[in-house]
Image (cartoon, rainbow, N blue to C red; front, top):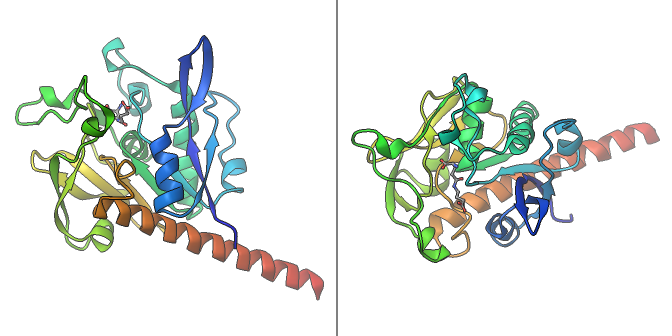
Length: 262
Ligand SMILES: N[C@@H](CCC(=O)NCCCC(=O)O)C(=O)O
């Protein structure tokens, strides 16, 4: 069987005087090297999206991080300039893909902005500038440092016993990186909280009743997926779920061909 393929929704970025559909290398690298899959970058379209047309052709969905923020209008709040930068095309592409992947039991891993999109897609809300709240740490990415330092593992989160993530990386304390200004405020009804930071920030969720791997993490397992054990385990588990889905799809196709041949 050839490598299963996962969809990664792109961001819209502007550089060199042009508009680009972009995904950071670390997500593709972790997909190929740690999860053992192939990645398909999905253009970010503000209109004319067709989530099912994409999902018909892949075996999983990886929703990546991004410096842009989900537009607050998508969770019932007024969008202030200070809530930016925004990426409406990314929002319009990711949220339908997330909802349809869950409906169709297609494996999904959502990272950082991705867990925030997952929460909003299922009816939850986000809090901005969480470091300004009393008792909440500064989870933002360190400034003016090299990328390895920016993504350095520097925070403890506590994985709930019996959770989906606990079955992958074990319950209890795990060390992770942290690069976000927003976080889940009201958890969507269909999500269960799976890990918390010491300051109470929600760091991981899973979809209640999901028929496939459907997990979101606020940290960045992709960045150290080849060297950090919990990061690698997450990507291997995602890869295994995608391979199972691809194999079941192949069985269905073979069975329908057999039926036609009779
Ligand atoms: N914008 C959201 C999500 C943060 C996120 O995905 N961070 C990844 C960092 C990407 C980069 O800046 O290179 C938030 O701030 O909460």
